Length: 415
Ligand SMILES: *[C@@H]1O[C@H](CO)[C@@H](O)[C@H](O)[C@H]1NC(C)=O
Ligand SMILES: *[C@@H]1O[C@H](CO)[C@@H](O)[C@H](O)[C@H]1NC(C)=O
Ligand SMILES: *[C@@H]1O[C@H](CO)[C@@H](O)[C@H](O)[C@H]1NC(C)=O
Ligand SMILES: *[C@@H]1O[C@H](CO)[C@@H](O)[C@H](O)[C@H]1NC(C)=O
Image (cartoon, rainbow, N blue to C red):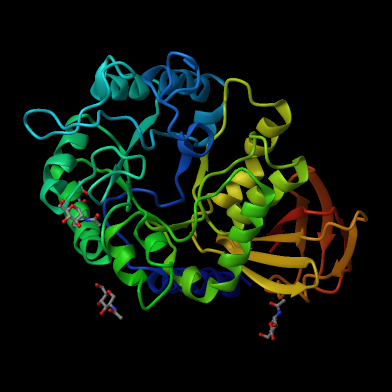
């Protein structure tokens, strides 16, 4: 008995190692061994620079500081939401006399360095935005091949912890040179800076134009596909794209480098409660970054309740770091499965249908191929926060999934 347990442990260990080896050859800056979590300006605040008329919601140090306070004081940071990221439209339209990017002094009167100090004092990390190209997407100074080095040094001197590097106003040739060059330049600063690359999204997200081996070597995360918008349509389109292309995307992800289907919009205007669960469940299955873009000052209790669900976060942050996949789709029922550490699993059954009746779905662990532990598994409903009981391979599992809704199960072996 003892020996067979040992063997199982060793086998599990060896297979875990093998899994890690085949997963990805990832950027080695020690960062994001699990998907990054945090908050970003873009989806909710866009390029709102009108601080005169909209002082509470314009891209400014006020906005960032007020989010930092919320992240630190309302439980977010302690659950892992630590990256606080400024997206486009933070700078002046001109570089300074020494050729450096400079923050708009009206909206960032203390400067980015002081803002970073403030963010760090709250136990958080600061993200900033740049663009490989002549201009940022919002028309601010871009980072050309010639200014990559100085910009990397500027960000490091401000003690920034993350760079989202967009790709507007550049050719594919410039991108092919610029994205690796920025990775080297960040590394050369000596400061570990999470490097988020929008490159693949500008190249259609797929081989042969996108080389995921190369991306894994130079970036910590990468946007594969279109920007998210505040709507269910947008969420569903993104989910469909990741499902369709999972044979390419799944092996690209792993500790240190993640596919990024874009920001979480729970707490904004476009999703119902059920639809918010869908985005969160599928993003957790996909081992996607949990970067919110919402208003933490006014967020509803419901949205907060979803985003702060510990078991959901546990699944998203699983240390095996293996992206899950769609394993079956029958009509509007999509079944997703993610293998987790220690023989655990997450299964999301999503109903994309809009006909009003909750859809019945019957399965078993055997049918889901979750059979390694013959003594059975404990099942939990993640969003209901409910223990459903002990299930063996053949035990029937009955569910009813709401229209544009999901049931996310966490499955733990008792072996
Ligand atoms: C960037 O600017 C250079 C110099 O003005 C110009 O030649 C080039 O066409 C521009 N590239 C893009 C992609 O707009
Ligand atoms: C730079 O790259 C080397 C080699 O991959 C790595 O060991 C080191 O941690 C990196 N340093 C930073 C600051 O990213
Ligand atoms: C992709 O990039 C890797 C790492 O740089 C390289 O070894 C490989 O040849 C590239 N693959 C293709 C098809 O270009
Ligand atoms: C379970 O595994 C079998 C055999 O490997 C495979 O044919 C089947 O598609 C799998 N089913 C699911 C739901 O993964």
